[in-house]
Length: 349
Image 1: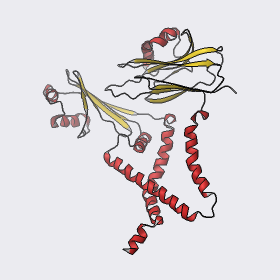
Image 2: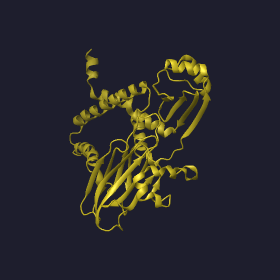
Image 3: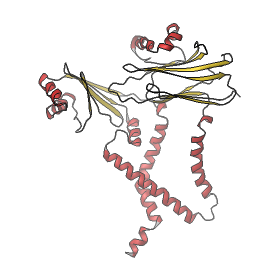
Image 4: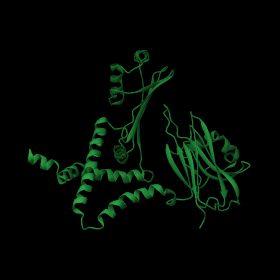
């Protein structure tokens, strides 16, 4: 027992055991931390598999009566798609269709059943190995066993770090640079968090919310500078479905009603340097460097308008005085289609 007690409280033992447990995991998490930090710069080609079929009237009637997926439907699903329906699924029912989302790490899967015709439609998307590893890093759409592993792994990392500090305290005597380096490891990340605007000035951050809806369409967004009378001065960004065939995405720009009246209907689309693809939920940065060099001095507003198919419409604005004579950091909060907008600008040097 004395031997066990002596080894149990030995910091070296705890340190090397915890390092052995979490060393490979820490390496993988460090790599996926880099890929997550540059997710927008890493190109990928998602692969989508579409399945379409028709459900027999008798099976459709059974589904509608029970409001759940019976063993008969699960067998039909396996035969029709070649995959197994998860044991526990959450379906969204309405008077016209049932929608089932089955998100997974590195991809997505969903299907709908039209209740009056029995039409079945499914899309399964695979976004690649990097997206899969990124989701494992975040624990997003992963099984409970993986979440248990993350908890155990995090505990091992805590033990590794704490015992490392204890060993430093014991063996760092005479090494004067040890504790300044430890403190630097704490201060440097905090400095990057506290002073983010110094790293990237003159930008507009547009944050789009995540919608808990059955059918989500990325919003069209327009950003422009207007004078005090509301007249458009400069277009800054227009996000829409630029990749649709025959410029089909342009016809929905009319849903951006305010921007369309002020600028869109007279613009030649796509606008060079302005038009871009729709953005996913999250924060997107728009570089404002040099955007207003030719704009006369005065008081203006930056307008942001978002409109979503099968959704709503929202506009936000921020005041802006040009030329910028002192650092600016202004924010406006949205309610439904826009989470927030945030402008950061500094005087020209």
